[in-house]
Amino acid sequence: MKRSMWILLSLWIVAAMLFAACAPAQPAPAPAPEQPQAEEPAGPVAEEGQAATVVEAGELVPPIVATPCAPGECLFEGQTVTVIVNTAGPKGPISGPFYEVRDEFEKATGATLEIVEVPFAEHFPKLMTDLTTGTGQYDTSIAGAWWLGDLVEGDFIVPYDEWYGDPRFPQWDIEDVLPGPRALLMYGGKKYMVANDHDGQVMYYRRDLLEDPEHQAAFKAEYGYDLGVPQTWDQFRDVAEYFNGKDLNGDGTPDSGLTLHLKVGGQGMFHFMSFSAPFVIGPDNPNLYWFDPETMEPLLDSPGHVKAMETLVDLIQFGPEAMLGWSLGESWDHFLRGEAALTFTWGDLGALAQQEGSQVKGKTGAAPIPGTTEYYNINTGEWVKTDGPNMVGNTTGGSWAGVISKFSDAPEATYYLLALMATKEKSLIYAARGWDGVDPGRYSHFLPPDGTADINDYLAAGWDEADIRDYTKAYYENFNAPLQLPYLRIPGTFEYWTALDIHLSEAATGQLTPEEALKATVEDFNAITDRLGREAQLKSYRTSLGFE
Image (cartoon, rainbow, N blue to C red; front, side, top):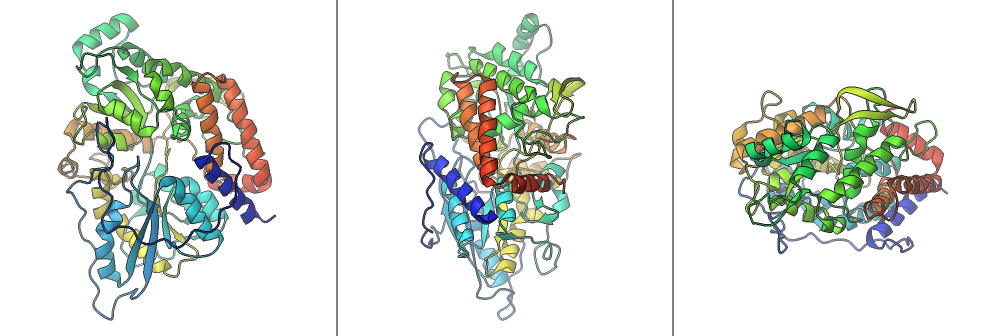
């Protein structure tokens, strides 16, 4: 069977997992052509009990940067660019900026922009159906970075190296992107994703609680050291234990030390990745986390991974029992209502904390994910103690960005659109306002001395000054950390991650021990690898990590 067909089979299995955990994978027919959606971005999507509205669009809009073309001189007169993009969801209305830029793009190029919004769970299957059939309905997708292995190895998208820097197109600087997220834009030495969103996870904490003199005195009396921003997961546990059961928002009811979300299909596996990184990655092992790059044997049952899962499962006792069935938004809301002292997640939470309905605006501190005092070196099979906290940065998440279909009949016009939205002037506004799902990741997004952003841009978007200073500093340090969790970008990535997600839930709910859960994960990983082709997967894995 050809490599591309193995990839397609994997994709359909992943799609089946998303919709019915036990249903067999069945190839679906190609979808009928989509019609462009409504002329305006989706409005607020709020549910009863929400503390903030995830997709509430504000009044701050990016500037016009493209010059209208004169009649008869438009570069792409008569062409049509169709984008497929996630509709409103926990990440926000990623589609929103396309509606804002459509008129500008059309006047500057003479082309027409059509926007197709689909739910998250439908995006990848619809895109892959279009690509594997060669239909070419979608010129571009705002894709998740973990899709890149499938898209490049399947020869479904084209690099844009020849257009980058060409004066015919809007100019943006890939070197402005910090090293961690910049690596996700490339594959095998070529540029494939045009910078947009820059995902990574940091820790959030209630600044007002940690700075309270009464809490500081009581914590030191109980734990023997000063209450402060946790730098290790041991300290995180102490802080979570101390605040658990206390009234943290003044409503007279006990609250939680922390909040997580552990429902299968709720993206909990992403959080395990960030959490576990410093238990495994260290100065003498900067790369080995997922697979052995010589054999493609999974590494997730190493003592470091097991210790990480044991530690994570232990922390569950300091959050509400209901979080075992929570998805991402429910956990975010628990923090936004002031009902938890700690969490760790994506940049969206920092932006949501500034919105109407949040009870923690001006109280939300942020810092890099905590580290460990030792890590398991997979190379030597030994635990290694470190002089200080072993901190590991991450680019965990989708880092949603534009790719160009091989079957597009308007590839240059498509690149023009993506480059226009990647310009510094627009990107800063996207990152500052938060509602559009774009998180910061460029030097131009960060405040001096780390970057060149003006704090007034964030204040204009409604940020509290202390919150934005903590937030941008945390992300700058995360993306610039010398050690980074390797990002998995090989065919079948989401199938591997779905297996991890299922077994993480089994450990969290006590159905399996952490060691049993990770051994089951490794068994599933091996089965996936064997079905997709071990040699081909190994080559992709080495390419994705820059080994070849």
